[in-house]
Length: 310
Image (cartoon, rainbow, N blue to C red):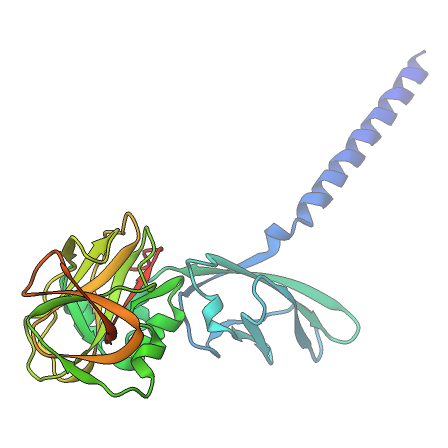
């Protein structure tokens, strides 16, 4: 009886030891234990170094990307992992990127797992170069003069951006720019409205004269005729032709479809357009009682449904 009892106990102990070893082996092979985490700021430049790949294999090694969260986000250059598609490093769409790299010496291979944690930044700030210092120094509610290329970068690359007011085709077609009376509030009454729950953050328009210092951006929710409210402070003093601005600290989203307008402190640019109409009224006012057709005012706003700045 004792011999049988010891025999049974021995079998039980073996089973427990095997289960324990199996559990330990499973844990040690958990890929999460071997993930290399790297922090990188949002919107790096293509070609920036992410990490130097360190493999435990000996001999002459080759490296290749087996898989990654976003195609072409990372690329291999020798034994370096570098930024490929810089737009993939957008915190609003990818807080983390995962890249699997395989190293090989021709005989053996080693798999390395990378987690790239994207550090959030003020997205408007990230796309400014010439005007970055002015943006940093501005107060909340200030409109900051920026360059045309900076405006275009915001329009093209900032996540979920909508253009309102006048379309690019209306602005850049071959129709001649004509002067339109200043000291009036105007808004294009067309299909280019601001979606509900959007933040208005940038603006461009054509000024016919120099030294304009009293113009304001306005927003109406629900109807192109108003009632309009001022958005931010007055535009900084600017000169003729196209001027581009960004709003520091846009914090109030629209609650319904919106229309962008402006109080034009001086003469502004417009174009003939048989398919367009606009609302207007003399002076800096909140409601636009008059409707006219056949022209489009050359102003445009940028908005997004996602707040991507401080």
